[in-house]
Length: 495
Ligand code: GLU
View 1 (tube, rainbow, N blue to C red):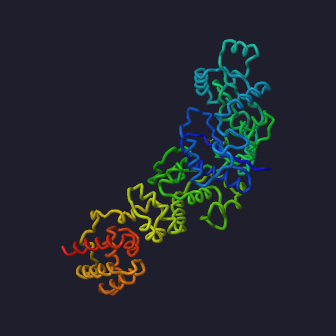
View 2: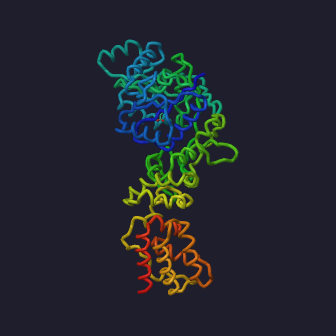
View 3: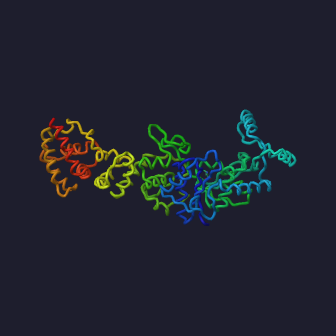
């Protein structure tokens, strides 16, 4: 069997983190089996469709590295891949169901339905559509059509028995047919509902497996009965585990924007993660761990290495919370694995966005020490502000330029010696600075240990409590700027 799977988002605005997990698992499955990964846009609900959403979804998938083989932009043998461009096909198959007695015309208006539903609810709970039009005679239908009344097409769901949904992850799910409503397939405006379009497309796009979120299980019995009515085989189902909020309370899929979950800000859009300084390789790695495990107790892995190991049978059906603290940790790991050049290039746009114009060379000078300190690319701005801000506004308070083991005068003399050394150091690199400045530090503290002095020196040149190590910071600043800051610090102590 050729594996053909699809990610079928509705274009409601952006790529949701839960949607990204669904897309990732489809992608892994397709790549593992040498199959095709298809992107299909389900925009049957025009009221919910947002302009620019298709682009936003594609941007998110591209950023994550989840490339698709067929889709709205790249085309493919089963296109078009946007449902609003396939309306004629859905009409044709709705008519086919009518002609073959599997569907009926429903003339009930929205107001009538609403009133009857309210009454029904009051009496014995919501049972869905009361099937009134299912009983219309040929004459009654003709009379209504003669009056020019519009109608929806409804499915004739089986009234007795049960429907079995074989699910690779969950085993058989059995649903009594009494629970399956006569769903609308074609609305009175002639446009399909999700159910009809989804089933027709999966069939005509030759989809082999449906990997989708758990919330669609409730639609599966209807879909299976639709396939049966059409006389088509249904694809193999695999409903992925529900994703819960990080606190474990509530469904994450219900969230449409960043929110506070017990004191922690929780992001939901893939673009929010990108803007918050997460790396795509950390995010795919993280999502792969949500409901599936790599094995060998390995939590960090490149997604390409997950491909040969990925098996639907190994996906855990239990609802699972999104452990965002794990994402932070993973992101830090992935940052550590970058080369200094990669990291310098990655943080540049974030610094630019903050208005910190820091040159490529300066960034490179501090990149290796940044690697072990950053959890997110956005953290770089706090560390590196000193490279940009020469205003002197951040000059440390004079009393902080001392240390218990370093009396004020020793600090001044040490900084003066350091100034001299920095002015003359050749070559001007971290190793040369380390050798000379450490020796100066040892000579100026009461204990003979350089530590306290280097702390003061770091504060003097970076003017920040947290920064990269002192020698790299001096190199990144450049000789002139480092000297100017040492002068400021010396003057402060002298005051
Ligand atoms: N359009 C549905 C969604 O937004 C797709 C559900 C399915 O995969 O069948 O998730």
